[in-house]
Image 1: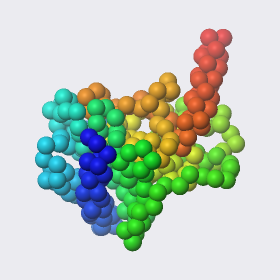
Image 2 (image 1 turned 90 degrees about the horizontal axis):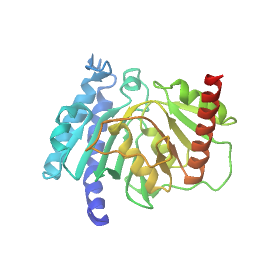
Image 3 (image 1 turned 180 degrees about the vertical axis):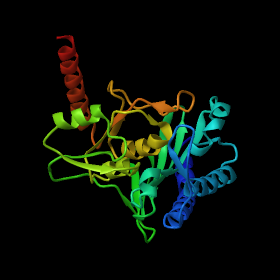
Length: 279
């Protein structure tokens, strides 16, 4: 898909993601119904309401393009041969949503041949909408509808690390300890990607398994803003709808140079741990 086509796709999806996110927000304080999915994770009536809006709109706007959602992942197998997929997470950070926090988000990503080439992340409770559709083309749309390019930091500062509020695993904790001094903030959704892309934080560590719909939109936005999202071996994260839905983890950073330092610190930590185990 060329740049003009990706931009048109994203522009068409902006009012859709706002509608879905606002519908979920309206249900947050309305005794929202909660049940457990087969994997034990929670799903609410807000997840499903958002999913219905997103799925219907994507099919209406782009009828030839497959749609894969967290809430409809059973249809994944039918789209394994597709080169273009719209990947949606109707409510990322459901646990935080249930607790009444404001950091939950809605994700939409365009995945082309295994690469997230465009993305949208909307945090309705904070009224922050981030989107991208190509290199150097990462934006935030303000409440008034105006867009601004995501900035690059100009003043050195103490590094700010973002981690999951609900999925902080021992490997991530060990790496954070090795990276001190840095400030650590816990946030429970894909909003972490957007904050790194906006230079409001420096990196986001997630060394535990996660799903492609949690990452694809964020990867597209961070890469468009000049950052990177890497697997633990230092290669670019692959959100390939032709492969597996579960990812082993990643390191997201606002610059490639910072990401390289984080990967080096991880390798040193793992080498030290392996040597200690052998002794």
